[in-house]
Image (cartoon, rainbow over the protein chains, first blue to last red):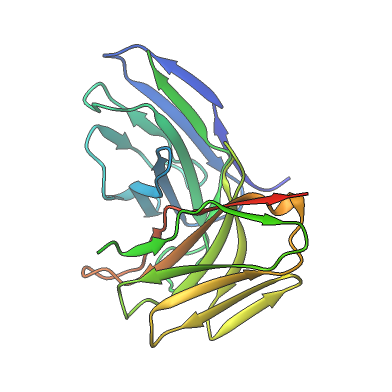
Length: 115
Length: 113
C-alpha cells in the first residue's frame, strides 16, 4: 500500500520541549517537504529536501530542524526555539522536486498542540 | 501583493448549482498550476493539474489565463460531498533556481441541500 505516513496524528508538547514528527514515504520520491498550516492560512514551507543528505530552508525554518538520512524518511524536529508551534504539520513528497511539472502529494498530517 | 491569492469565501451554494473560484498569481514565469481539495482537519488532496490552457475532469474544469495571471476552477452540478476548502497552488522558479510551490489560503465551499 503506497503512500505517505505521518506519526503521531496528534501530539501534545509542554513549553520548552523538543518534539520530532515522523514522515515516511514508499513512493520512491526524491523530494520531500514540510509545511505548516494555521487556521485560515495557506501552507507555509518549513524545509524541503530534493535528495538524500541535502535539505534547504523554506520560508519559516526558524525553530525547526530536519534530517534526510534515508530517501524514505524526512523527520521534522520542532525545537523549544519555535515561539508559536501549535499548528497542523503536513509532510509532502514529489517525484523529482526541481521539475516544473512535479506534483506534490501529502501525508495525513500531525496536529501539534503546545500546552 | 501576495504571490498567490484566493477569495476566502465562504461560497454557499445549493445542490446542483455551478460555482467558480478564481486564483491569481504574481509571478509571470510560473510554470505549473494545481487545484487541491482539503476537507476539514485533513490533508490536501490533488484535484487537478493545469499545464496548458485548461483541464476537465467530469464535473470539474480548470482554466488558465496566462495573460491575466489567474486560474479558475469550475464545479458543475454541485454535490453535498463537494463541500470542502479548495487550495490553489502555483509552481514558479525562485531567484535561486529550481521550482517552489506556493499555496493560496484556500476558498471554502458549502453545498447545501
